[in-house]
Length: 31
Image (cartoon, rainbow, N blue to C red; front, side, top):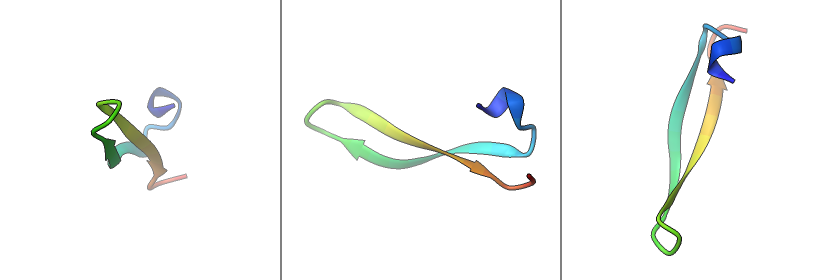
C-alpha cells in the first residue's frame, strides 16, 4: 500500500453509484 511506497499515490478511478463505493487504484510514480 502507500505506506510501503513513499512515491505512490492513490487516484480515484471509478465511482459506483449503485453500491456507493469508490474504486481506488494505487499508482507508483517512483518505483
